[in-house]
Structures are given as C-alpha cells and as structure tokens.
Image (cartoon, rainbow, N blue to C red; front, side):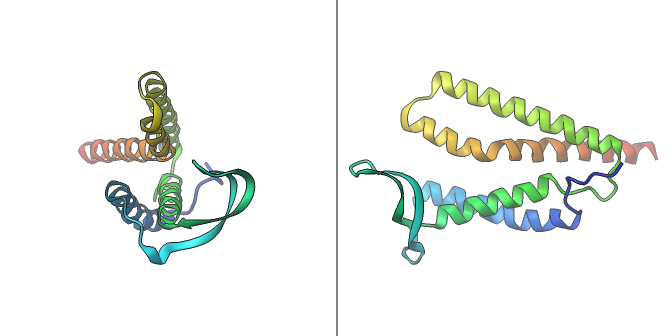
Length: 158
C-alpha cells in the first residue's frame, strides 16, 4: 500500500532529535520563566491586545522569541516522529496508525472537555497551551506502544 502522506523513515530520527531537547527545554523554560535577553526582538504581530495597551490588528512588538523557537521545533519534531514511515510499513501498521490517531483525538478532546467544565481563568490558558501539543504526543506514545507490542508478539511467534 503506497502511503503518500507519510515522510520517509529517515525523518523519524531527525524528529526525535528536534522533539526531545525542545520539549524538555520548553518545559524548563515555562517552569523557571526563563527568557534570555539576547532573544529579545521586535517582531511582526497580528491581533495585538496588551493588558494596559490599545488593540491593533497588525503591528510590531517587542518579544522574547525563545518560546516560539521551542514551540516550532516541538511541533516540527512531533510531526516528523508521528508521520514518518516505519521501516516495514504495511496495512497492519497503517491500521495501528489510524487507530492510534483516533484514540489520541478522543483522549485529547476528553481532557479538553473536562478542562472546559472544571478549569478556569489563567489556569485554562495553560491547559490550552499544552493542548496544542498533546494530540501529537498522545498519538506518538500510543502508536509506539502498539508497535512495540506488535514486535514483542512477532518475536514470540518466531
């Protein structure tokens, strides 16, 4: 079965190299509220709405771009890991991939639904920030778990 929507297998390793350090550094950055001064830049922005400032549709703002860099690397790395072919991609692995994606969407939106009902104010903003990344992370975790179970089962059969 030809899967045109998947990256070649070599992209999986590149994805892990991007994903692991950027996710770890992103969490550390958020926990410690670290923003190095050399990453302060004036950047273009859309929908500017400061707390004590005027609202603009478009403009230039001063911003520390560390969070943006780490977020972009985390997303690109996650996409490469999640959507790279396995070494031997067949119909059964495609089935596992689809089931894992559906499962990740269900779990992600179940968490989001619970968050809508029980988490408020700034805490909800934090949930939404993490929610941007969790669907891909849930997929990666479940897909790799199912593949490892398949490999163990295949190892016992031989």
